[in-house]
Length: 257
Image 1 (cartoon, rainbow, N blue to C red):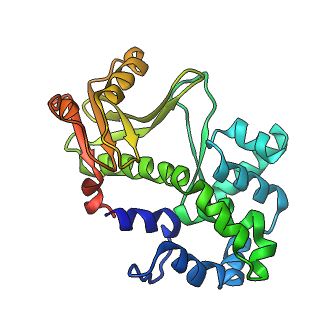
Image 2: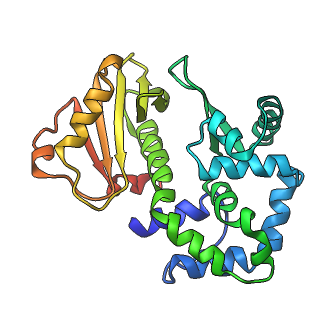
């Protein structure tokens, strides 16, 4: 499952054969970088090669996804950015997540993990890649790899809940404002509220994660808490499992990956 998650983070959304007996980097080089012109044309068919669109998409891929910070990173005005986002959302390359906190800004998500990978690691340094010089790409990947996979882990956690709970999810995403940033905030068909934390770490997750989640979400009055961990849980935290607290590991994703 660790291998599946690793490859999905970069290739998710593509209909291609991947040799998982080889490492991630070798697959990226063979299937993406060496075939750059093919993938570049597919992206251009969506973005029309517009430099403003590309700047915004790179800003989204390298940032926290908030509209305000993405446009700032791209050095684009609010008006220009709004028009660009309208087109990009209509094209299907991105989706806009409305902030449950009405005073907060909305977030931008890529519709496929591959698009996020492209605009984070490939598009900004395309000149070297065209010349088949992958040193800068390799350095860039190594420096951001762990951080980059956190986002996909959270997205998969949300998808898992949406597809597996008996009390069907009617709305799911995150919850954020200037004080907190909650990984999972969901409403169910029966009117229950679920909040959750996602920890893409192989270290044991301790009770402190639950304590912080409860503190950050006390004003939301949640009915249930969920925690997703790539690794394991401490004995203390596992002892707290109940109908109101569910703990999931990477194995849980088997049904959706």
